[in-house]
Image 1 (cartoon, rainbow, N blue to C red):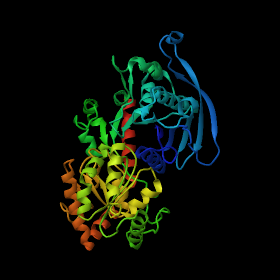
Image 2 (image 1 turned 45 degrees about the vertical axis):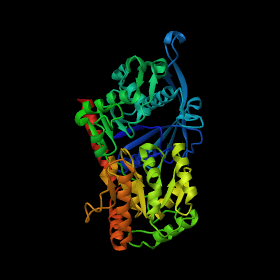
Image 3 (image 1 turned 30 degrees about the vertical axis):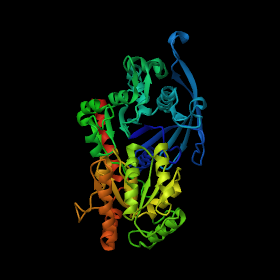
Image 4 (image 1 turned 90 degrees about the horizontal axis):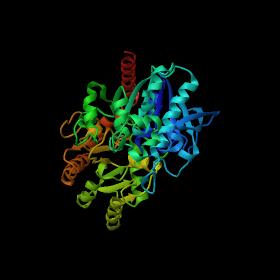
Length: 485
């Protein structure tokens, strides 16, 4: 099949979180299965294309105009499409400096750009114009999150029905995070161009809702979160639409790139190791403790991620003093909610040999924490999938998680299942529940033979992209069948 993905991020070119990893790894996984894959991405400021020849072509793309401009007839923007081979797929960069040559992908000083609807409508329109320019049939247009919804809406527009290149394209939308909708108030709906006139309500346009409605198949990134998101508590305000999709709403568990995440080859680590030879992990632990000034005498609990209440960092803040009193050491790496950062920094200032807080985004340091920590905390209130726990498992670092979403699909409590358990889990999003799970994990850590068995089970688990790529392939086949019927 020929598949065109539209996304706002893709590792290693543009990344703020796990979305970028998924887009790149899935594209490569599909390529290994024999599919022809394009990834359409904004040409952001600072983006470094892969080495190789650049194929640059100039096109015009329909855009919206404010009410009253040229009788609302619309206009066109001149855009360059820059094509280059990435690792197993074609990367197509949409080069429009006014839209994408900015300090941040989405926000200025913490506030969404007011023209985000126009920017990502331009991305989607350029993706479709690129398909027309190629002149080759495409089987599936696969959008990721609300930023890709305008592409699906434009494809659904009436003019596509008679287009010989676009008329048979099937659509899939992956919802990585239901918390972000791309809300566009009615007074700015003109930014969507002609597709904005037929969607939304009197208040405005919820691009995530519209994308879900337009897609033949919708999925999220774990089976458990797919079930949870059918309820209002987890559905992000679109649970009604997800329920209405019926069996056309799927949960496909993400994988991780096991080539990039491999302690046997990871150049960021002080020493390499594998399940067959674990001496290097002890060296990584000693290195982490020494560099951060931690007393190595107790279990080291690592956390890497966005400091946000969704991720349960407030639970950690409330529990940290009692964790330290029970013997734990804590390492936190990440940026986000400033009140959470300041709270953790204040705790660290009181016990600098027990708590280290690294207020930054640092890929190499993240790898050293995955390798050097004994356990990895993910106390998320909700977690569509999560990659941290899968990386931790691969690095022999035992995860302690709240049993929700993809965490529940990948981490199995070693006390509840002594023969297959690979971590520790708790239910209630409360500090006491987190403390209880950490306490059980710390007791297991003190039993070195048991701890090594738990580590070994995690390292033996296959979290590669082979299975998820096959499941997406099946979803594409189904979407194509629905479109052609």
